[in-house]
Length: 187
Length: 308
Image (cartoon, rainbow over all chains, first blue to last red; front, side, top):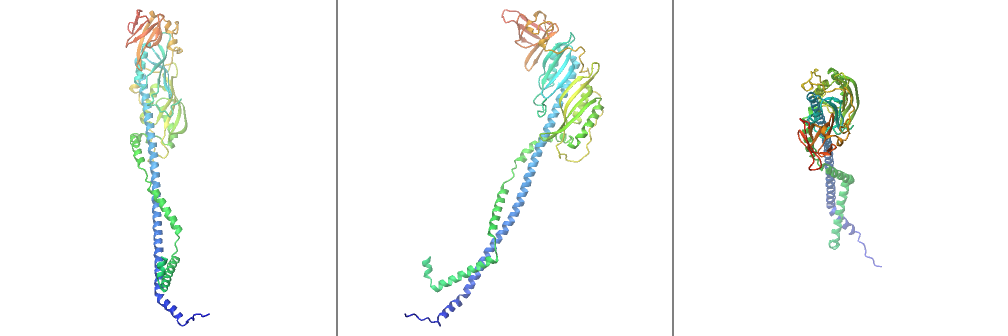
């Protein structure tokens, strides 16, 4: 076996020469690595900070938006309630006015035809007037007079003689749909 | 790539490897020195994206536009409705109302408020009332309440004479009092309950008394049944005693009130009457024409003045 002799004097010298020449470059590479790593980490940190700021802003914006929506909903509900309220007031006012006009018409008929009411009643569906008239030919006059003061026509439901002294009549009218408060006028 | 790499000299390759290792160790050192939770960063990115999506959903402006017409429509009634009693004032209404009724000369026999009820978000309180007094006093009160306290409506009523020889009437009412919705009143101010002097009767309420009880109570019967000694059916009546009492039009339909003696009946066009089977052919403003089915039959002309 003829092995090649190892020159121990030269070998360490070559290794030493490589390490000595590479040392600044290695150091430079290491520093570059540190720099790259630092820049990357710094960029990530900057991104994290930016996202945190953005999250705070968006949360505030979202909260403000929710409050705005809640305010709008409340304002809408309030407007609807106010509208219903006004409608109720208008409806009630119309009903009172119609009834007062009808009462005035009854007084007029009492003066003109001698109408005397024995029962005057009304509910959510109809008005009924039980009365006496001195003459039967006053029935059409009373009917037309009352119909002029009411949105629906008055009709004669029944008529009877009172022993030669006038007639007893029952007149009837329905509540006009336009002025009826449908919410409650159910007998 | 590998072929290109092997073109380098061995010592150069070794050199490059050493440099790369040094660079990586530097990066690793920086990473170790500046640790970052990449998972938390991803979660944060997701959270921000969700928030952006939420805030990009704009609040629709439509409700603003929709509520404006309603508000405009109500503007005219604002003062009216704001004047309504608040919920807390509901109990104070009834003594005030009783006092006003009594001041007008009406006797309050019953005043029974019910519980406050919410109808479509609006509170209201029903009340049962029984009053006695002159009808004209009630008319004055009705007018005054309409003017000074317009927060009520009458649902049901019944008015009857209280006694035979009296001008008084008995009034039974079911009414509703309108109240303000809770928390609506804009300014806290002491309510002044409206007062008005006891007015004398208005021109509308003067004149003949309207209500009177029956002096000789006669049961009310249907006109078709009120034929006295005759048959209730006008088809059996003698035509020679027939008189025209009145004519009126109702919903475009003419009606005539005719009678035999004191027994009136209401006729419409085409209706049959009399033993001779007359039919109503025409109803004029002051006359009625009746004819039999036969063309050569007699024609009967009833007028208001001559009677026949």
